[in-house]
Image 1 (cartoon, rainbow, N blue to C red):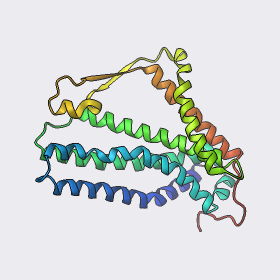
Image 2: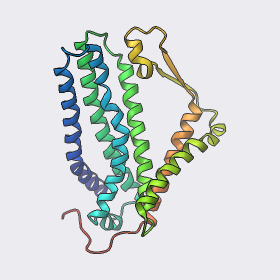
Image 3: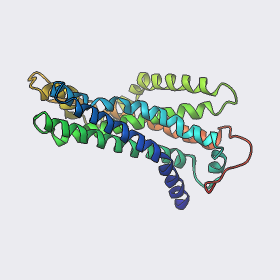
Image 4: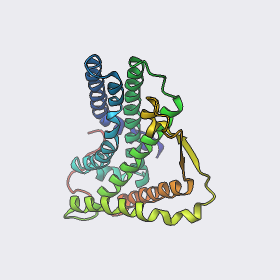
Length: 259
C-alpha cells in the first residue's frame, strides 16, 4: 500500500508542476511590476501591495479541490484509482497534501517579495514570529477551503445528473452549517487552552507604520478554534468515505498510471 501511495503522490506532484510554475511566475511578475514602480509610487504603498497575492490563496485552494478530482473523472483514471488497494482517505489526503505543498511554495515566494520590499522601504525587519504565524494560518485556511471543495465535488459525483449544481449548493450549505453549528462542540472542549497571536498580521501593517493603537496580540479562543477544525476533519472523513463507497465512476476503458 505504501508503494501505491508513493506512486500516486509522485504522479500528483508531477501533474501539479504546471500550476506551481504558473503561481511562481505570477508572483514574480507582480513583484517585478512593483519594483519598477518603486520610484513613481510611495515606497510604503509598494510594500503593502506586495502582500496582495495572499488574498488569492483561498480561491486557488477552492479551485484546486474541484479541479484535481474533476481531472480524475475527465481522464477516467478514477476507476483505476478506486480499484487499487488504497483507501479513499489516502486518495483525498494525497490531493490535500499536494495543495498544501503548492500553498507553502506560494507563501514562501510571496514572503520573499515582502521582505525584499520592506528592505527597499527601509522599514524595520518583519518579526520572524509574524511570518511563521501568518504562513501557518494561510496554509490552514487553504487546506480547510480545499477540504470543503473536495467534499462538495464528491457529493455531486454521487448523483448522475445535476452534479455541478449539487456541488455548489453542498459547498455553500456545508460551509454555513460549520460556521453556524460547530460551536455546539465548544462545551465539550473546555479543556483546550486559549492562545494568542502576534497582532501584526492583522493590524500589523498599520502598527508597522507607527500606529501605536494597533493590537500587540490577538487572543484566540482555543475550544472554538478546535471545534471549527474538528468540523472540517469530519467533513474530510465523510468525503473520503463517499469517494470510496458511493461515487459514480465513468464507464469505458480504464486508464492506468503508466498511460
